Length: 112
Image (cartoon, rainbow, N blue to C red; front, side, top):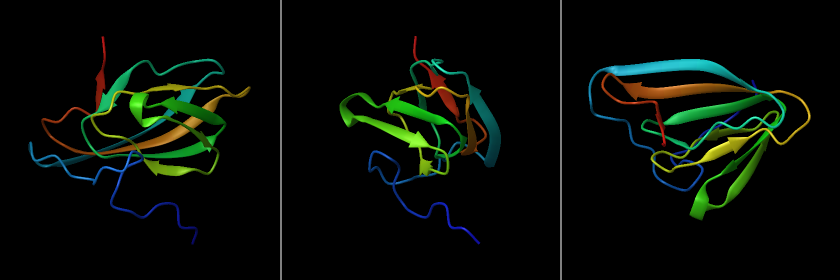
């Protein structure tokens, strides 16, 4: 067994809280970003777990600073904090993302 993450707070220090909009709905996916690619400004409406499978990504959390995540890093992403991720490495980054949400809650809210 290899422990990856255990905690009660997200990356910007806020206590994790599950949405109360409906029945639990867990969604998982793998995000792949090419070198130089950005996620675009967005925020998460539900607790969101990330695990870097390959490469690296630097995330700008505005007033909360920037953090660089590399292969093997596990973290709970910031909720309701606008941020933008950039693959600033020279290989594709692959991120396992798990949204721990509920029916009626938005996993990703894109900023315009």
